[in-house]
Image (tube, rainbow, N blue to C red; front, side, top):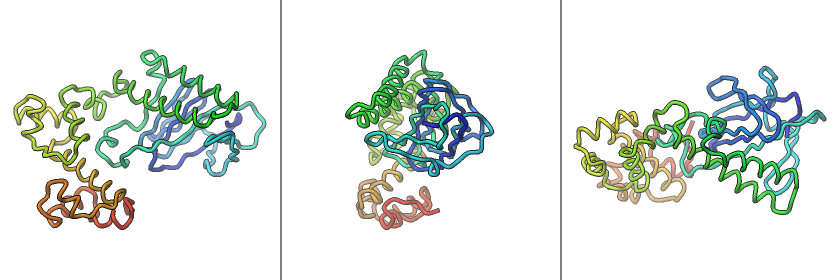
Length: 288
């Protein structure tokens, strides 16, 4: 909860951030450096969690979230206050970890900001979820922390699904690709099985088109060639194997169909910017 005159700055982080407005409206200084007014019942998701500010009004000097007073309310739920006794705004702010890093091709295609107010007409359940979350906080019942966490998961997923299905905003990039039934089917197959033998010919057969027609359609919708997209997805999968699972480079190379570690490593470095051995040493962390 934040008092009447306030501004909270949220630094960039790896996990996605979501904010739900429970009581009183506020303003967002977006990753695009624009002020956007948020109303009661609004919700937003910032997939790549770029730096942004939530404020009672534009122009209020922002204070980093770490400098606010944070008091536990219940399990994993905290009351954030700047010490004022003024009428408060009820905000739900949290983080969401995707099983992908922010530079993954799928997340790169997602918009910088997803807002719920454009989706309310087609997704009335969003408001009910927000009301339920507000009720769990104000009633302070046993198990509220776990219920709030699950409601937040459902709400964030509902925002993403509604955005995709209803095509709010610019229907390009990720939205256009997923909404396109032919290309969307191909993308789903690539992400489901990155180590598959995804030649352009095989993907064209899946879409039921000639090689040239498929390549042109894919590039138009996705913004890059099928071969380049498959390579990026596969190298990001290799990054997870190496950093998260501790897989040997030679094993990752073999699983992705490379004849040797020597042929795999240059391709990995070309996409990821560092040698595959780097991610084994650092547990998946990218060097600055």
